[in-house]
Structures are given as C-alpha cells and as structure tokens.
Image (cartoon, rainbow, N blue to C red; front, side, top):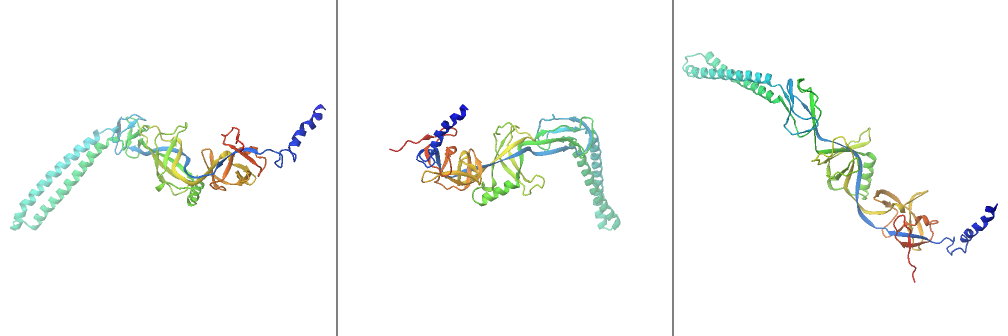
Length: 386
C-alpha cells in the first residue's frame, strides 16, 4: 500500500517533462547529442577470401620400366629427393647377360656384312666381263643388303639391352618429397603396372579453391556496374592464411581458372601457385585464400554502427539543414574493416550521424552536433556559440 501511495509522486516529474512546457522542443525531450561524419567518395582496395586446400604442383607415380627383383631401396620415405636420383635398384645381372649376348650377335652380323661386301666387290668386275652369270651377281648384291639389315637389327637389340640395364636404376623424374615405398627389397616387380612410390613437388606449391556461382555472378554485376575494377589480366595477388591464423610470408599468382561450374558443389575450380622454398606449406592443408588487387572506385563508406535496421530495411540518419535526424534508406554492399560500403542512398558531402543514434527519440527529431567520439564513449557537446 505504501508503494502505491508513492507512485503518483514518482510519475509526476516524468509526466511534467513530457508535457507541452517541458523543454520547448515540442515533445519536451532535449535534443540528442550526436557526432557526424561527412560522406566522401574514394577508391578502396577490394579483396576476396575463400577456403582452399594445398596440393603439390606436380605429383608423379614412380614405376619400374623392366621386370625384375628389387635389390635395394635408395631413399628415405618422406625425405627429399632430387631429379635423377636413384630410388630403387632392380637386379641388373640378367640384363647384363642379355646385353652381352646382343653385343656378340651384333659382332657376328658385322662380320657377315663384311664378308658379303667382299663377295659383291669381287663379283662386280667378273660380271662386267661376263665371267659370272647375272644370277650370281644378283645373289651377291642381295646377300650384302641382307647382311646390312641383319647388322642394323642386331645393333638395335644391343641398344635395347643396354637401355634396360639403365632402367634397373629407377630414378626420380623430379625433385620433391618421396612418399611411402609400396614394395620392399626382394619383391618381384612386373614392370610399369606395379607402383613403387610417389614423388610430390612442393616448391612451388598449388592452392586449389572454389568460387561459388553466386559470388561469380555478383562480381560480374559489380564489375559491369563500375563499382568494382579487377586487376589487369586477372593478375590477383594471392596470400594464404594457415589454420592457426598466421599469414604465410610468400604471395603467389593465379595460374588456372576453370570456366565450368561443378554440378555437385556449385563452384568453379580456381588454382594459385605459391613459392614454398622452405616447405612450410604441405599438400593437403586447409587454408584461407585471399585475392588482392581489385579496387572499388568512388566508394562511399560509413561505420557499421551508423547503419540501422528498420521495417523497410537498412537506413542511416542524415543531418538535415535544420539540424534534425532524417532517416535515409540505403543499400549496403560488403564490409571493409569496420565500415559498410554504401551502394545507394548517400551522396558525397552529406553528413551522416555515426554516434548517438540511440539517443534519437524519433525520426526528424532535433539533434545537437558534438565532437566526434569513439565507439562506446560519450559524445562531447560542442561549445555554444556566443
């Protein structure tokens, strides 16, 4: 009962302040103290961020070219290997024997050719004097040609045998990181159908990421409207942020962009190449990829705290000539730091209220402009004019 008795006394000052004679401002509320900023058009850098995954710039499967028994593994699994370095040794003894036999066959073929040439040379003057028949001379000439062909075939077999000896040393086709050995010493390999190991080149390293169809359409429309200017030739600067938030020190360039859109993911594959001399980035890592180099000409920005949400969408308060807070509908674009990019609704030179919007009682209310204040601080009222 005592609380009910005090309520009229507590409400009386409040009702008096809201009355016609409260403060001489129509509703009786004092003008809100706000700070404003003058809208300016300027060129801003534009960047785009996507989720990507690293992969080796070259990944090859190492296979033997000949059939044989693995005699030795000459590399450390997971270690660095150089181009041309021997990774496996296949027992060369059988191939050496084949090469020796091919060498003997070539020598025999060479001797037969020499004999055939001598016979042809000896019969030629005799044939001119009709001392031998046409058939004998033709047989000698044919024997020489056949011996020459046999020698070429023997030399080809010798070259093949010697080449197979070199193939017993399975070499790395590039410099990179060796994978796990799929076959151990003593295993029989039947040729190229057996995978021995893999080698991945990590310097440079590739980063693959997808750009969604919606994002691509948005970028195209903003470019056509002149709100976005892409770098010449699409030469974006690529930076990578790792899973722990650190930004990788090296930057790269785009080296592939697919025109096709995946029916499964709705994205088009894009790939960047980044130097990786110290091997900091490893294939398979998930990273954040940032594309830099585009610009937004004549962009208008306002702090995010100045943009409010109303029943009809986003709006800001613009300071009118009568020092009133007039609401202005706006269309916003992307975020740039702590600011919204305003696509429409504001013009350069207009003054937007950025601090003190919570003190505005109603649209069109009078305001008092103070000194600019940081977010969370009180607005300092400007000194009154004398």
